[in-house]
Amino acid sequence: MLQKQKLSIEEKVKIVRECLQGNIGIREAARSVGVTTSTIRQWMHNYEADGVGAFLPHKNRIYSPDLKRQAAEDYLFGGESLRKIAKKYGLRSKRQLSNWIRVYTAHGDFNSIKFSGGSYMKQGRETTLEERIQIVRECIACGKNYGEMALKYQVSYQQVRTWTLRFEQMGEAGLEDRRGRRKKDQVPRTELEQAQIEIEQLKHKMELLTRCLIIYYERKKGNKKDAYRRHPIHLIILFKFKAVAERRQWSSAASKPRRKTRVKLCPHFWAANVPSHQNCRLRSASRSSGSFCRARCRRTVGRK
Image (tube, rainbow, N blue to C red):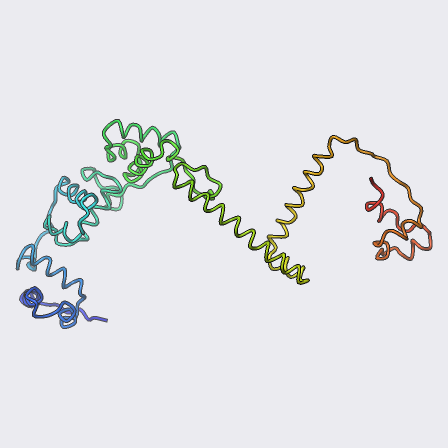
């Protein structure tokens, strides 16, 4: 771990000049004075901007809201790095520019008073679909002034901007709140979403088919209990398929008249044709009475 030591202004200027002239590398300079490489780069940046005065004691500068907004927009829409934008506007640190960008994207207004905690950040709030549609339509009508709409409806700047972009791409469907819904169960709003939903559905089908094949081969080897124990979901799937088949059978037989007659069979028939009677707990009592547990076996052959 590097040990911080207090350096004089002359020492800082000497190290920065040697780095700028190429006499010493940034890593070597940072190691020699016990600071990080980012600190050396920051010294070089400040020296290039203000010269030796960058290391002198100074008061905090006050920047106008217009300059802050312009710097934030140059970074968001210009495609340049934080360091280049900071150097362009004479900022001592790119962290200051990052704070401006965060305020701009969250609220879009540098003229308003600071909120609680000394921050410009405006927290978003929950809104209904009707509110979002109204905010977006009014925002487009007034020339996409996101900051004004955020102040008027007490929402964040980022919310208004996101809703407007989605409305322009997908219409009112883009303002729907689809959090907590599975992708494969959603109604597609664009061609990309439709392709993503189809991919999710195909993945789900492939997973089911793969597991069904595993269960099939395990059952074929004789490991039925192990197969269901390892893949319990497929027991539910098989029962589901069975229920669908039975439902179709019932629907096809619904038009046919149902016979409610019950066939009475003699005890000798039960003993000869119902194997489950062999495992009946009341076997001894049934044999002595001669009734052969008709109540237990009636559900198998007693109805037609």
